[in-house]
Length: 401
Image (tube, rainbow, N blue to C red; front, side, top):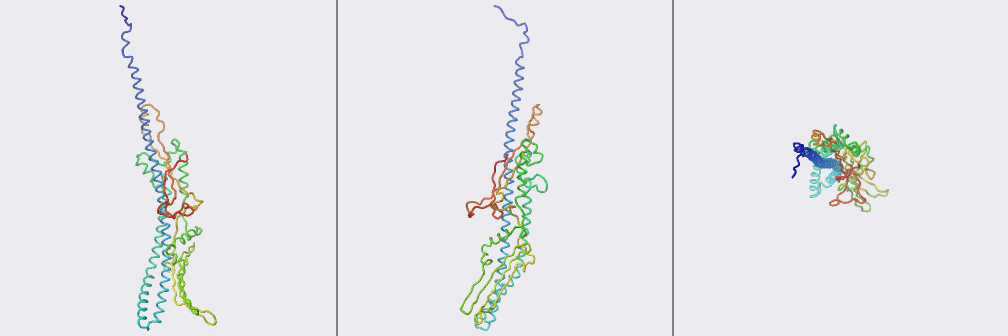
């Protein structure tokens, strides 16, 4: 039997080692790519969640500020109406005290009746004097409190405008802080991130939302609001309406004799003067062949500017720039969040092209005005967005791009 003998016996050993080296290298590269893909996917998911949280938190911040403006508008109007009620009360109290004082003069010599009327007159005099002393304190207090609330509105409006800003005096850093709670390297609405993939397109949405935010609300006063504030005051009288819009009166008619009580309160709100002026009087009429004659038995007057010379009521307030159906019914807050790709340096060491240096995610939240179905009366023909009812809510929404 013949035996085959190779003429190169030493060259048959170690040939599979070369293939093994290539296989190991391919496996390593595959592992690196899988690690890079997995890490990028994980970071992208984290970044998207951070962008959603940042946009939602920024929108919540804006909605709370809008609700604060609504609450404070109602509070300032309520304080102003309270002064109108107080002025009406002081006028009425002065009329009553004067009426009892005159009655005391006529009944002082009548047994039993005279002492009783005198006692009532004494008590009413104390009450009137006490009320007249405390009325200026209440008027100054309400006026000063309204000035403080308007100052708080100014600060609130400025901070609301800066919720999407990343620098300067407007920056409130709410969105950035929330995003950084997901990862310290995440930043939101940063100018340099415009150069990321899709950053310029996303920046258009961010800038559009910022511009709308800056133009959404406007400061007003009685000079430039076309009577809206005065109408809101009138609509807010509530339980004070009978005192302010009524005549606080009564009458007794006996053919040739009439005794009538009149009373009213005038509300002035203009650029030149804001005031409450109340008047009460009791008029006695009798008939003569020459006609009816009259005499004022007792009267009382009062005004807000009697207790505070420079009374302004509501110094200023914030409302939508275009209230009613013509206004934008929603506001939007955009968050362009970015973070560095953690595997970039590792891939560079492996001689691989890392691709994008930073990951980016764009999220958007919507702020809308909607009266809750439970616990509140529904407006008859619907309700447009406004800064008098604090029903501003938030939801995530889709991007424009």
